[in-house]
Image 1 (spheres, one colour):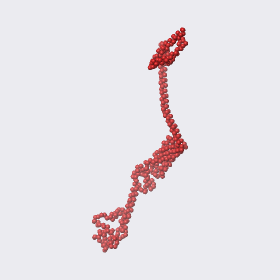
Image 2 (image 1 turned 90 degrees about the vertical axis):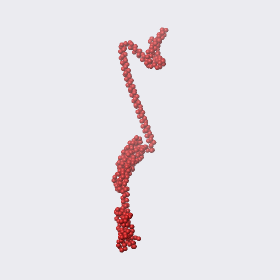
Image 3 (image 1 turned 135 degrees about the vertical axis):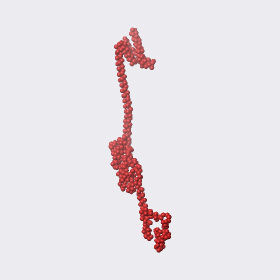
Image 4 (image 1 turned 45 degrees about the horizontal axis):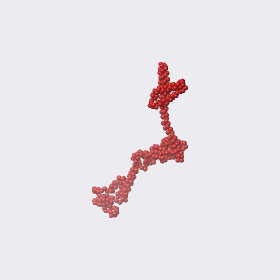
Amino acid sequence: MAWNEPGNNDKDPWNSGKDRNSSGKSDTDNNAPENDPWGRKKQNEQGPPDLDEAFGKLMEMLGVKKGGRGGGSSGGGNGLPGKFGGGIVTIAIIGLLGLWGASGVYQVDQQERGVVLRLGKYYETVMPGLHWNPPMIDLVSKVNVTKVRSHDHKALMLTVDEAIVEVGVSVQYSVSEPKNYLLNVRNPEDSLAQAVESALRHVVGSSEMDQILTEGRELLADDVKTRLQNYINVYGTGLLISKVNVENTQAPTQVQEAFDDVIKAKEDEQRVRNEAESYANGIIPEARGRAQRIREEAEAYRSEVVARASGQADRFDRLYQEYLKAPEVTKRRLYIETIEEVYANSSKVVVDVEGGNNMMYLPLDKIMSNKTAESSTASSSVLSSNIGNITDQVIDEIRKRQGVTRREGRN
């Protein structure tokens, strides 16, 4: 039965120990503990804590005012729901604030940079580490600044000598300025592709076809990189071009065979030129060495002739001194030496016999060959010494034939 129904003696469950009797007087002797519906004990009795008091203290800490007490007032009956409603709202607000604050903590990696936008406007660029920004107020965008990205481009282009070539390049780039990369251009990759197209066409259009297809590829890559970086800086995309590689340069497919023949002919020309240079590098030093050898031989011959002439002149001077001393002996000596030299250099001798009509033939070569067969190991010095013997034999043969010729003439 409710506490305020008839027959309940107006016992107030919220009454802290004060009970009314039927006559309206207070009974403080022995009815307070029994009439308390919550079973609260006296203050001097020890027991478990009162849940109502604990909850009330919690509400006070949360800033919720307690509801009014009263026996028959209607406002006193709504106190407990008011306490619960205010506490739940406060706890929810505190929890939401905690979640909001925790969601603002973020980590920026070592290879990244964080671009902070506060209410849609650039605020700052944060470095690697742990950071906090108010959520829903600041927007943080992380950008990788160490990753090397690549863009490939291939197209048909017209050279300065009005030839069409197919050029393919690969561009390697990275992000150098995160702010410009995110805010200045809507799509930096598209801007890069258009800049590559423009720079490549400009460089190819100012070069000749042979240079692009052969040895000018490195120069082409350097020129494209320089011009492309200038374009990117003007656009403000925040990109850094690290390297440009020329993947392939070739003629269109329709005329590829003709270009291959031309390239092959140029390679043959270069090969022949290299062979000619190699031959020239080999023959020229050899010719120079031979010329130097001939020059040295001529110098030695000149020195030899001059020395021989000087010796003969000195010999003639000495011989003249001897001639002055003994003219006849010197004449005879000179005659014999001259005959020896003549006979030594002649293999046949024809002698005109004095006082006769016949001429005598002496085969000295046969005589010498017989002598050589007898002594094949004789030296040139021995040959010179045999000249006198040969001369004596010749003289004896002449005398014999002269005697025969005279006897025939007498008969």
